[in-house]
Image (cartoon, rainbow, N blue to C red):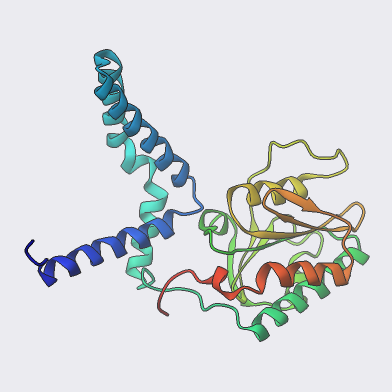
Length: 258
């Protein structure tokens, strides 16, 4: 068997890397569901062709062709985002993983803000991005890119201010957006839980993020993760929950270089 030329090896590695980076950009967006749907179409087409179902094969082939033609329109937001990343030199970038001191500082700031907001019965919605990107929700809000502090969080969620009704999204040790809109869950929740809790559950159903919710009506503090809620947390419980969720630095890597 002839040896594989090194140029071919590098060719495969480069293509594989760009596909990997593209998957990272698309991960956590609506494009993921569309890609799964395309995969099902291709598999069904192959099965129908193998089984000799000519009519089914023709229908699936025509449907697949229409979908492929429509892809540039369907994927317009994701394609634009990929080109923006390339233009900014961010296609190869990543956020630095949390160090222990970074994690502690972020958690301390969020816990202190949550305690004060809870005592004042001021609603809040704080999202921690992890491996799955939240770009489409970040872009729905106001871009901030500010260092995390309890004072900044308290100012954002002050009632009647422009950003207090939306979500704050935290990436690494920075607040990247405020006033962001999140998807609402269709799951049945207790009637006393409002829109903030529905948004918290909704975004954790489509990503691996962790969300802190402070209820405006009762002042209770809740964590949402994996589509589930852990309610009525005190300050120590909230700190423990966030520490457990964020302490693994590997879960916060989002690329290879910065």
